[in-house]
Image (tube, rainbow, N blue to C red; front, top):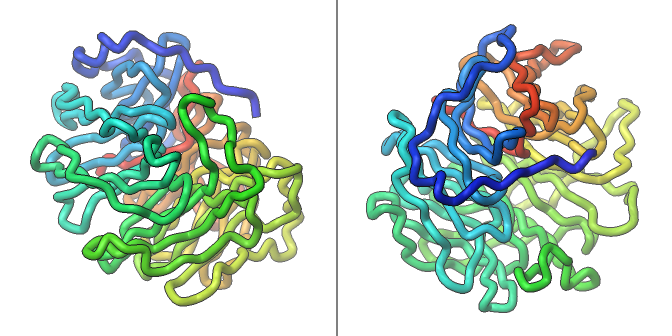
Amino acid sequence: MQRRRFIFASGALLSMPFVTAAPALAKSAKFTPILSAASDSGGKHIGVWRDDHWQMSASIPRRGHDSLFHRQRQELVFFSRRPGREMYVIDAKSGDVRHTISSEDGYHYYGHGCLSADSRYLYTTENHIAGDGAGSIGIYDCEKDYQCLGHMDCDGIGPHELALMPDGKTLAIAIGGIKTLPASGRKTLNPETMAPALHYLDIASAQVVERHAAPHYQLSLRHLDVSPSGQIVIGAQFQGALPSRLPLVYSHERGAMLTPMDYGELPLQFKQDYIASISIDDQGIHAVTSCPRDNLVCLWDLRNQQLKQVYSLRDSAGAVYDSAYQQFILSNGNGQLMALKPGHRALTPLAYAAGTHWDNHLTLLR
């Protein structure tokens, strides 16, 4: 995968409202508007993409990562990528920047967050820099301008993506295991002692109640999604010599073991061992994983935990399920938005933004 180009804009632009950008090439199919971070020749952007153009967009000083839509408050929340310390809260109607939230002193964000069952609280994965790189889950009160209320110990280094379980009481956390500190950049400081895992954290007690170690100490578990029934699909990014020949996608249900997804009879061999975005449909039947460094997208059948189809998509990036149109929306580093419909042999073009490099995550505005 070619390294994407990111041009950082002035932080002063954050005081400006979102603006509507010029349209790109026309769409060829319908889809629900998406939130995402992206970059283009004019700067780094976060915003809402609708049909064939940025409905709202703004420049931010660092590369963005994931986002979420707070439906009750009609707010968009964007997270900066590690070692960024900013979250941006946007008015979903006007496009105005309501808040720029900075992490507490001694912490930085890992680029992901999720809401509590009642949407009152926001939980974020963070690096406790002052705690020598210990993983932490930040707690923010959405009704008090996202004031930080404190942190919970997730009992692991490098927590990345997290999700609220269907019980509304438990967080599932992908523990990457990679220790980094801002003073040494993105250098892995614990290459021989990594401990990647899937952890379940009980919110009420702030205790980790279930731990499942990755099958290999260098198999960094980074991204996940959870189905309505509580089945988790989690993906890995191998940190050793490539290719590892290890399974990279796993299924999990509470109380059981991590189960590698089966490639079946399809000829799939990863070379770069890097799973990025993961999305499960709203019925818990299919999951999609993007594999940007191998220029692939994989469709999995969760009923038998088996690979169903492989699609070629150069520098594949984000994936999200669009229930309104019964399709997965995919993005890539070449400005494309594509639809994946289970049962269809080919991807369907949705939109194209020349010069745009989508980041690895998409969120629906619904």
